[in-house]
Every structure is written in structure tokens, then in C-alpha cells.
Image (cartoon, rainbow, N blue to C red):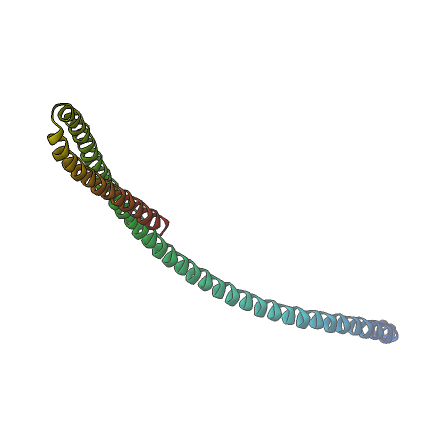
Length: 186
């Protein structure tokens, strides 16, 4: 009896075995398909990861190159800036020196003009005094008149010479001012 029960069970299990085996084969096929799909996804993800890592390395190399370029450019700009500041300082010093020379020339020119003007005023005063003396002497002595006439002539020549000196000094002043303007223009 037990043996028959076992045989019946065994036959029953044997009858179900092809169905279970077919179900397991179907499940196995589905799992293999899923495994193949997962492997393809893994391969794709691995390739994507490799591509992304390669792009990352490229970007890092580009970034490093750009950082080096920036540092080099910054160093170059700082060097140019220092050179320009030094040149600017040199130009300022030249300008200060030129302004000092101009001021000195102006002072010398003013002193010369003042001296010439004073001399001219003195000569004109002397000339007026001499003319007054001459008129006085004219009234007194005709002989003195002839002598004074010669002296007057000499004074007028002296006045002309002084006027020429004044004109020359005025021309010198104009030349100095022109030189100053040229220096300032430089």
C-alpha cells in the first residue's frame, strides 16, 4: 500500500515534471534574456563610463592648459604693467625737469626784460634831461648849441643802439618762449 501510494505519487510527479520542466525552461530563457539585456546595459554603461571618463580627462587637461595660459597671461600683463608704470614715472620725472627748466628760463627772461626796460627808462630819462639842458643852453649860447647838437646826435645813436638791443632782447625772449613751447609739446 505504501508502495502503491509512493508509485502513484511518483507517477503524478512524473506527469507534472514535463510541465514544471517546461515552466523552468521558460523561466530560464526569460532570465537568460534578462541577463543578456542586463549585460548589454552593463556594457553600454561601461562604455558610457569610459567615454565620460575620457571626456573628463580631456576637460581636465583643457582646464589645466587654460589655467597655465591664464597664469602666463597674468604674469605677462603684470610685467607689462610694471614696465608701463616705470615708463610713466620716467615721463613724470622728465616733465618735472622740463617744467623746472621752463620756470628758470622764464625767470631769467623776466630779469633780462626788467633790466632792459630799466636801462631804456634810464636812457629815455637821460635823453629828456639832455634835451632840457640843450634847450637851456640854446637860449644862452649859440656856440654851445652847436656843441650840444653833436652830443644830442650821439645820444640818439646810443638810444637807437639800446632800442636795437631791446628789439634783440625781445626777439631773444620770443625765441626762448618758442623753445619752451616746443619742449612742452615734446
